[in-house]
Length: 121
Ligand SMILES: [Zn+2]
Figure 1: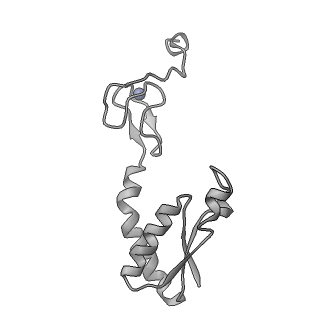
Figure 2: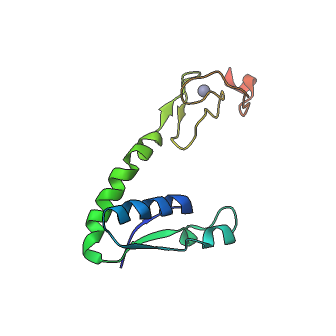
Figure 3: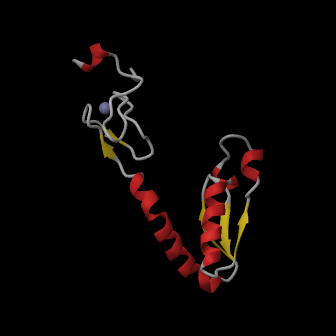
């Protein structure tokens, strides 16, 4: 057996398992139920894992996973805030500085992490 993927989200692992199964690749999940038992943020070694039963299919499985995850990966790209020009890391959906979201909409709530006096210096 070969491990092909691990993720914090058990739902994601379950989804990817289904994807591989539709391609005729037998796979099993590990740690699938430990996540919730370990609390809100399980340590990385408790993350749910996806294992391919037949080693020789792991390369194909990885290729399929890569294709399946590609649209998600592009969402995680860093983006430039249209409100203040700050470079925001991909995992954030809104600007930490001015609170605008990725599409540049006016913030519903403003995050004032930087005092305005410090910003004008
Ligand atoms: Zn901003």
